[in-house]
Amino acid sequence: MPEPVDPHEPDRLARAAARLKLGHVVVTSVSRDDLPDGGAGHFAAVLRALRRDLPGATLEVLIPDFGGDPESLRAVLDARPDVLNHNLETVPALYEAIRPQAVYARSLELLARAKQAVPAGLTKSGIMLGLGETPDQIRGVLADLAAVRCDIVTMGQYLAPSARHAPVVRYAPPQELDDWAAYGLSLGIPAMHCAPLVRSSYNAGRFV
Image (cartoon, rainbow, N blue to C red; front, side, top):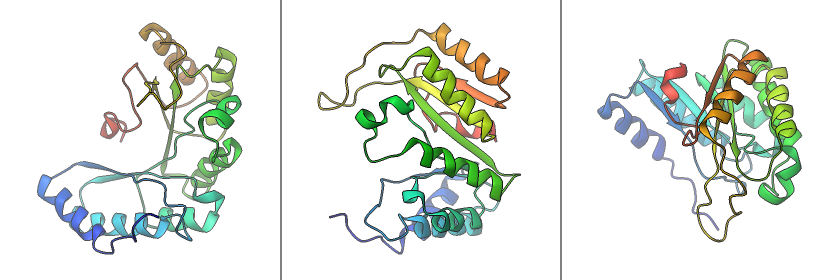
């Protein structure tokens, strides 16, 4: 079982960010499905502490899907992140193998709800290439993200963290990732950041 949430963590994190004089802060965590709200209240507490101690910074949260609970999402949005990030990670056809506890439609709905609730707020998502997805499936994901008015999309090469993880099926050349960036822009996605070593928080402040 995970340890209990530390109620002092938001203050400690905010003080550390203030000492570092950060201009953009990305807040994420491991999934806390053991908590009734999926950790949403803790995300909100961290955001409030950062607003208090680092008022000039822009704030980004990389959140789980909270099991699809709209109230948990609302709690995070009420704490006013500048960027709400939730990664789709891969194409729907690979969810059973790669994200067995996640639901593609639920993740997409979270991004849609966030944009509907705070139209001026930025939403962000990302996927990995190299897990066995097809070009048509990638096009479908980008079309879905454009349809929910996602503002920022990141795409990078999947690298297996260990031998126990899914193997790399294919390495996408840099030019292909450039082409996907152009394709996403053509669909109306405002910002596409695609390169082999791009991850969801890479150069995150540039888009804000």
